[in-house]
Image 1 (spheres, rainbow, N blue to C red):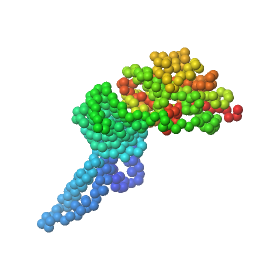
Image 2 (tube, rainbow, N blue to C red):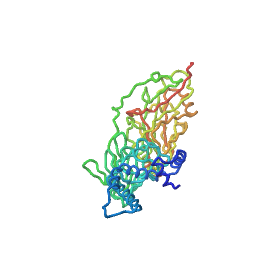
Image 3 (cartoon, one colour):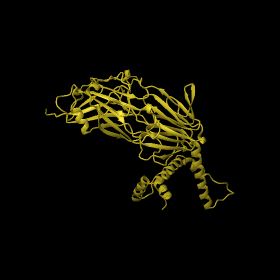
Image 4 (cartoon, rainbow, N blue to C red):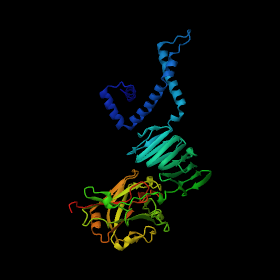
Length: 454
């Protein structure tokens, strides 16, 4: 029995249970068979929807002077089926495939109303990518690489809407005029390669890797060429953040664990950027971290200080640093591999007095152009974030972290967060973590475990 025959029998509920189970397993394992099944299921659904019209056409009597042999009747029925399929396609042009999900290896989806199997044909609808990177090939010739977390609405072969997230577009001459909308702007391609991001915090960013684009923002229009970018919108101001003053006791005991966010006591968090020494970042809802040797001015580091004054007496048994990963809306994951981050602890207690409201790149604690001054900062360990991974919570712990907290003398602990992994192009992803000013996410938190019997 051929695959076509098995697909038809499965759609008509005529496969024996044991054969159906084997067929389902093969569909899951074979991407080509999955694609064929999805396409046939779509056609089957359209024919079912037009069944009344099909009956009308097949039952209409022929003129009395004409006699069709049985074989001709069969061919007439087949022709009617083709006609019905054509009518269904004509009546539902919005559902016609306009793109193919060319690559979706390792992707996780949430809330999509389009097929998410690699090789599936895509019509108008929405794709919601929760994890991974997916490549869409449009019939117009345009190719989009969608970076999680992202939500994309496909409108037609020349038009899509990026509701949230990031994408990189490669648009050949055949797709001249391909358009990407975001909540803040409309990007019209003029034969180019570009990247677009739309942040849930209310901003959009577009960068031209090569070629030209037109960007429309309301009634105005601007042309961008190779290397040019445009950022629209802004992050919510710090005043929108309703900070809750929580002491370790208010957090409660969980098998001896106490939580210290940067939002209590003398806690503080900020990031510094090499290329913008006058940018004050202590009130930003996101902490940005980036490493690049291709555009040194975009290098960023983060500083986190925790107030240990209210902790119980005695050395902690365990410790972990909690960070909420967020979408930055800056740069593109497709240009950065899986990334490794390093956590350092400041060993000079005098450096804990850095000011969140005024810290800059050149005067940041343990500053060094090559990284951090090894006499003032000690590496506590590393963690990794996979390319295209969804926002998640990092739980970092190491023996060095525990020892660092135990050896603290002034009841303040300051950590420096660096990205050690570089990038293939200068506009690679800027990683982001929630700061204490973030309106919804958890601030950087140091969790410490104590002996409950003390």
